Amino acid sequence: RKEVEQDPGPFNVPEGATVAFNCTYSNSASQSFFWYRQDCRKEPKLLMSVYSSGNEDGRFTAQLNRASQYISLLIRDSKLSDSATYLCVVNKAGYSTLTFGKGTMLLVSP
Amino acid sequence: NAGVTQTPKFRVLKTGQSMTLLCAQDMNHEYMYWYRQDPGMGLRLIHYSVGEGTTAKGEVPDGYNVSRLKKQNFLLGLESAAPSQTSVYFCASRPSGRGEIHEQYFGPGTRLTVT
Image (cartoon, rainbow over all chains, first blue to last red; front, side, top):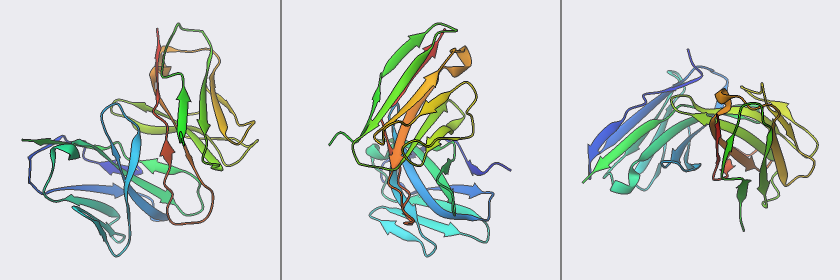
């Protein structure tokens, strides 16, 4: 099983739709979880951290299920500007490095 | 405040040539990283550094060397370029500390083609 797995997509949704991405991770010692966003031919940027109790940032909601070792990202009321690749990222306690998933592509159409 | 910068932005090399990619950050970050990103492969860590004068291997270090002589700079060297090293190279940095947030700040990338 790969360390971090994501459905590559693309997810094609109309503006205003709600879309959800899932990500699974293999190492139960993982402690910190993040979603990064990467626009086409640009560098990745932090979208949000994922906390055990779940957290929300505007239209974005992240959830963590430690028992099943998966992370989710929900985007409500999709905008054209949400079109990007979303990277699931995991850190193991005591390590200085992050493990990136290959990303899920989202395309929002008018 | 420039953040993380990378030089050059684009480069074409012939097989066997050498080059150095420069990463510079002005945020006084302790940790710096070099990644490569290939279609369908995601971001893969090449080498990283947890402080001036230190380096460590990542997931795909073969064919690359690095140096961190100054805190603000992290150099990635290709001694003898191969077509398999055609990729987009990203540098990243972050502050040290045990905080929960491990946000890495990325540079804009270097697109390297080896023919």
